[in-house]
Length: 366
Image 1 (spheres, helix red, strand yellow):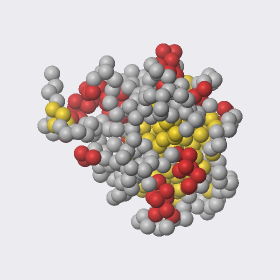
Image 2 (cartoon, rainbow, N blue to C red):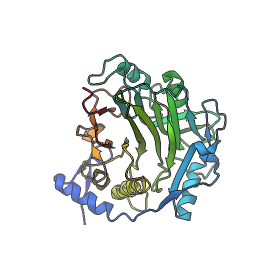
Image 3 (cartoon, rainbow, N blue to C red):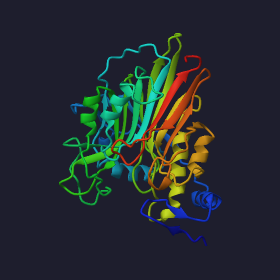
Image 4 (cartoon, rainbow, N blue to C red):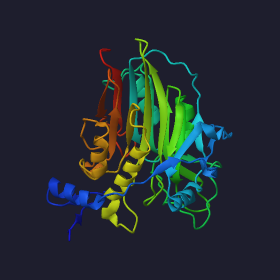
């Protein structure tokens, strides 16, 4: 039997007598995550709707869904999905693609809106972030954004919802954030933010982009403890040479710990199962960037090893969270002639996570 001593308050701060022991335990805990078959989901669900920033309904075909095939799995996911409001898709910028040989991507868990996203955008645009071209197209892939208001349905007793997260400082609603940035936005709510009839908030993933958003997708990943779908869009970068890079961007936030049936040690299995389901739902030959808070305990956790086999990981190995944990990851698979550079910033900008910045660049462009 494994004896595990948990220290401190941060999940995953384990004393196991060395990196090899930790990696071994995580591999055993992950086990052989059984494969989850994913398929297009064309069902009409209230939570599957999509609206603009004013709450006006949009054509449902603008957002495609992929879900696990299993009927019971879908039923459980639907119970969570019905507690949140519709997705938001807003194309506020005109569909003009100016030639550029590079794209700047930011990945960041903003701690329920506490991260100063507008401030960070300002620093990126004013040339205050070393290594970033302030004139390049910019995309932000955010986790733990939130929305409040009447678009979120009233709470019903007995429905699944996590405890409310409300950092003790000012927060920025994703609707206000989209308006302040002027960027195109796709917001995919993942779960309700709190229980009780006085709370009408949901939280989720947001992709903000100075480029138009195409082929907007949502992936219902297998349910472990909480509902954690992934969001995806396609952007197109026109280079000065006349070639175009079509790039799929995936924003994910995997499970932090497992449900009661697997105990805490089962969370590597939960993440691995979600990662394998997402990988199975993706076309293998599409240029892709996958960024997200994967909630990993170790750099060699099974889900990371699985993704390494399909993508190139960020080479900056510094922690992105407390207790020396690297929770946040950036993976890419680019076509010939394109390369990426990725690094962690040195400030948290009000969040409890450090942002990750990456540049996707055409080779030979300087």
